[in-house]
Length: 224
Image 1 (cartoon, helix red, strand yellow):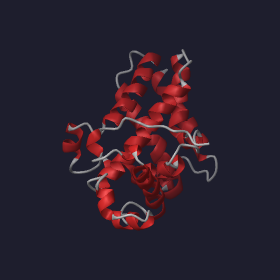
Image 2 (cartoon, rainbow, N blue to C red; image 1 turned 120 degrees about the vertical axis):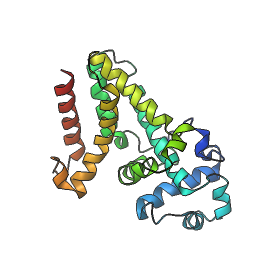
Image 3 (cartoon, rainbow, N blue to C red; image 1 turned 180 degrees about the horizontal axis):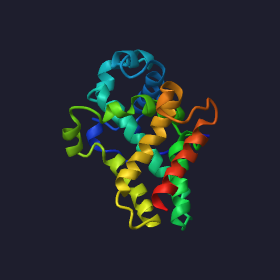
Image 4 (tube, one colour; image 1 turned 45 degrees about the horizontal axis):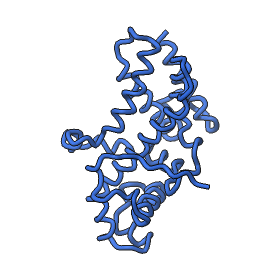
């Protein structure tokens, strides 16, 4: 049984919200499958249309271009992390324990679902690791930021920063640490598999557990 989750994403990301129709959900589902399989550079709406037995025109009714589709997917993933943190900390009072849950949610986000309707979060996470920065490391970043297309990332960072501040109110850089926790949770897994000299995570198995230990190590050193 799949879980039905709908996130309220910035309307600037789409022309028509794909979460609201069968075709739209199919576009998202198969976009994740295809980008995961062939990479973002090789992906285009013509190939997607053929995969879902539809037309390019129908896809353009939802998204202006493939960049905004990628940014939509990344925003969905940011909202998924926010959802996990809120869900997993709902009855937790201790700030240090909350921060440990944040780290676990960042690193193990793909193991907590596997049943989300129309999105394979495991494959989406791999897209975020491989392609995610292409969504916001662009020459259009100022324009896109001005209309709120990175609000979900800012909300995620603010949530984590607030917990960091609860652990240590005198820590000077909570937002910096919060965004770095997210980026490191993805980058270190990528480095471990493809650029191993850039990390101390060298295991081929249990990499997520080692990354979780590493992030908690840094937090303990910085906040205590």
